[in-house]
Length: 79
Image 1 (tube, helix red, strand yellow):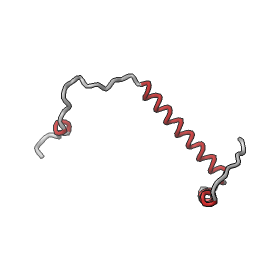
Image 2 (spheres, rainbow, N blue to C red):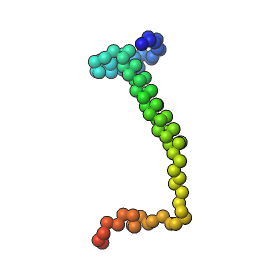
Image 3 (tube, rainbow, N blue to C red):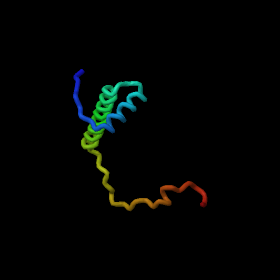
């Protein structure tokens, strides 16, 4: 693990101290957790994006009209 020096405004640092205490951890570990979570989310987003880009299915209509809402949601019987 590497150490990093960051600059944070006083209000943000106070929030981080309170939040770290609430979570029973250090500010350092809290910041590290936030960074790791951001990385995981970004990685998941990029994986989903690349899967979408690689999807070769087409979603084209054959020219027939779309069904009417009433046809799609018929539940039998009269309303």
